[in-house]
Image (cartoon, rainbow, N blue to C red; front, side, top):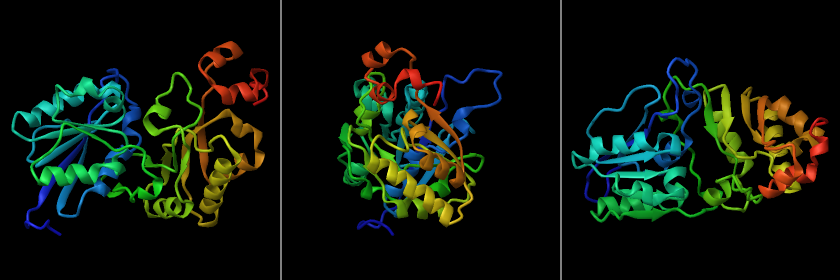
Length: 302
C-alpha cells in the first residue's frame, strides 16, 4: 500500500562482513545465524516500502539503487560499515546506522553516515521513516527501551537462504550490570519478557529446524524469569516443534533440574555459560554477582 502521496520506496538493510574473520578458516560464525535486528527493522517498515536484507558474509555489497540504506554493526565490523556507507552516500543515498557499536559510541559513526540510531528499533523506527518521507531526516534518533509487546514478528523470510540458524529473542535486558558487559547499557537493567505464545507462534512459522535464542540469559535471575523459560520449553514440547536450539544462560541453571530437563527435551543442544573467573575477588570486581551467589567452590559440581 503506497503512502498518501502514492510513492513507493526501497530500503536496503545491510549486515557488513566482520573484519575479524581470519583467512584460511572455513567456518565463519557470522554466517551461522540470522542478523535479527535487521529482520525486526524490516518488520517495522511500512508496506509501501520494498525491503531487502543484504548479508555481506555471503556476498560482497556493491552499489544498487535504493531510497534509504540501513546498516547495523558490532565493533568488529564497524569500519566495513563505514566503507559501505560511502558507496551509497557518494551517490546521494542517505544512510542510517544502528546496532550496539553506534549505541555505545555514536560520535564514532557520525562523520561517516547521515543518521545515527541508538537504542532499540521499535521505539523510533516509525519516526525515522516518517521524517525521511517528509524530507527532514535528523542526525540522531534514540529508540529507548520499549516494552516487548511492541516487537513485531521479524521478517525471517528476508534472511539469506544459506543461514543455518534462525534467530529468535524471548527476553531483553539484565539487572546484573556486570562491569565488562554492554547488555545493561544497551538493553537496560530491567529484565523484559515476551509473551510466550508470541514466541511459540514465531517458532512455528520458521522453516529452519535450528534456532539461536539470542537472549543474553534465556533463564534470567529470578523465579519469575525461570518460570517464563519453563513455560516456553513446555510449549515447544507440547506443540512438537522439533527444533534444535542453543542460547546463553547463567550458571544458576544448574540449580534447577526441572528447568534443565525441560530445556533438553525441548531441543536444547548447547548453552553458553559465563564463568568469567574462578577467583571470588575477580568476580566481585566485575560485579558478576550470580556466580558469587553460586560460589566458586561449586564450579566443579556444576
